[in-house]
Length: 239
Length: 242
Image (cartoon, rainbow over all chains, first blue to last red; front, side, top):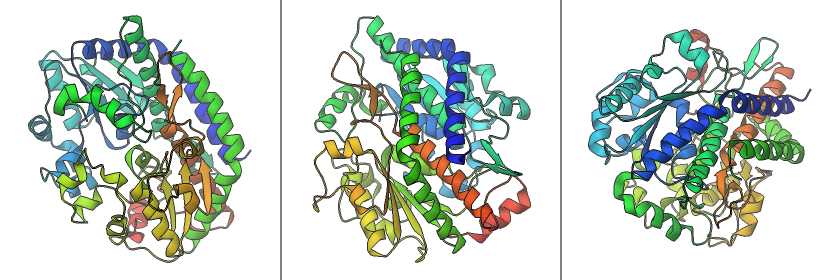
């Protein structure tokens, strides 16, 4: 069969699997996010390596819900608080002091909660963020690839109130051509789960009889005014 | 009613439409990339905003091609001398600017055989159009990934009056709706974006086909396989380019 078709079929199967096995957790996470947002909290997102794709899927996204905020290493690089080379060689994920830099650079609030995304769930910086949130009594949601998490002895989930599994193999190999390993599925499936959370979060607001703060694509006429009206009340806490 | 199940059902239908309508365009893109890699070329990937996800998804992992280079927006600041205040200005949005793209383009070691993939859902903003235009004027093959529904529904923002897709040798439509969000609500706004999901599927299917074509030609595969010595040697081979 055409290898392109094989990839599309594989992804559709994985989407079905994610829904069947995890829809109740997805709903529960959406309720946690909604309840945090109702109290003027923001969901702080942090993703390790490819985990950033999940972060991008919820943060300031067209058709997404407004009160999310991304903790980005790139922001610290742009503001000369860390070096690009430490991101390039991944050593930054071992540096727990980056948590202090995030706290200094962003306007973080005790009403916020955290959603932390990592294939392995074992990086010291990630664990530090989870630990600090728990110490403050803030809720923490984790997204990991459970097979990889188990294989490498991850600890993120010990701090999490709920968690999702990306549902990939360890390592994440989508297809094989003889002995050649090709492609990945974890980020695409994670993106689908992020959008399922968005759908359930929208429903949460509607079920509460409230208007959902839905962002428009910035590339649609008039969107800037609408989107700013949703994010301005939060000042620097979102965007 | 909007819920996870409705999104699941609608995204699966959309992925079917995407494969059925774009299979030939993805195949053409895979062939162009295969030819580029066989000539020791590199694929430069540029997308602003959320479109950057496509490049991230097919790089730096076991099973991924090495000769892929992501042109990062942040390079404008870290390598291109643009002040961070200008780059982050929320009133004068940087990705909409015209005439600054060459500052990014000139930062990289670009060879004649290289191919460009330029991604933008709306295909109307200054920088993506200027990058595609520069690549084309320099004789490179340009692959565009965009939402045809979105780009045709919006007026142009670029002074040329053109949209991104008009600069493509190969155009792949990600089949996403205008405004990117898929699910109609009872209100004005729609919810749940699809471009990142569709773009990832396009990129992954395309990369898989590139590797298959290279293998058929007996070309030594520039693909990470998890073996440290193999992967380091491969990364070294493309150092400074990818």
